[in-house]
Length: 289
Image 1 (cartoon, helix red, strand yellow):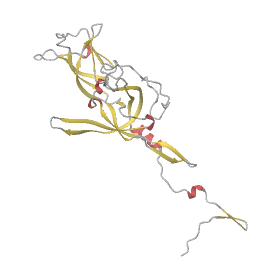
Image 2: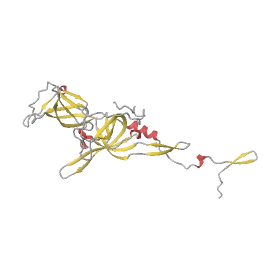
Image 3: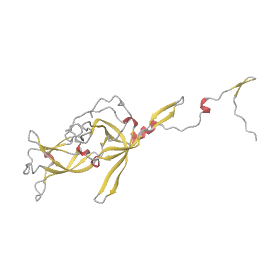
Image 4: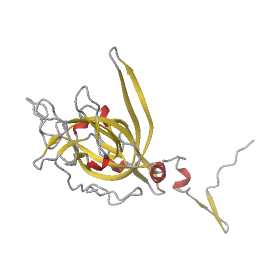
């Protein structure tokens, strides 16, 4: 059986004219990723988050560690700047249990899919705005110049479930009504009308508090830090950057991160010229949010 050859001629009247196949006919078949489709999926299936860039604090030198009194990092070694809104896909928020001889270490880990324009890096901070988490901690109060007793919380609370002042080891905790509590960012103040126990240098004012807050995560690993790919546009190849994948951990599972309390640290945010004016998620350049 004879296989016919492809027609490479064009008949015009009685003349046979050679015809060159188009470039599209000789281009090998290919399947390309479409960045717009990936970004649309992140926008549709993602959740609203606040993203803050991490900077290492220069209060650390070769001779000394990070200063515990530093007003830029709070002694953690990390400064957070340029808070902005975006939308990420957060999934597989699970627990990784590690058995030790003396205790069990439980860490909450979440996978994060983020648009490439966010340029996530190690230790960047991500707050899931519309979700709730419960946290309990001990607050040590100090007195300001106006005689108001105040303290700082690890997270910015949305609602306070319980606050009880420590009296003595033999006495019941003294519950404080929510109407006698003032919250500003992560700063908590007691109203002057609250009846306080005996306080001195050896008996500071402390309390236990249980409250609702937005979950906060810190990026500690990149599974896909950069995903660059070429796509055929009909005339040539176009370089595109696809969403990235990172792993993040709950704030209270990261050493010293609970020392980063809003209201007592300097704001070192700067004008980010690389910030994209708009995207399909939300207005992207809003560091003053």
